[in-house]
Length: 90
Image (cartoon, rainbow, N blue to C red; front, side, top):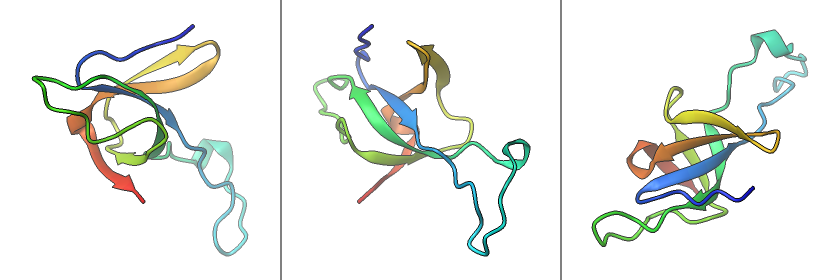
């Protein structure tokens, strides 16, 4: 299935969290928090003739509870408005 976000919405694939600390301690799945970093999988055209500031492939940071989670073909994504994105990682 193909999903194309409308207006200023962005589809984000969450990046995997670290399995180990810097000191080598393995973090169990139950203690891991959801990462607040992801890759833009698709972006809408923008709103009110204003172009989007993110594009497909950008790595972005977002708030912990931003957007709505959904599953497409067994993969988990988040769809959110562009304004909920905090930063682009370069």
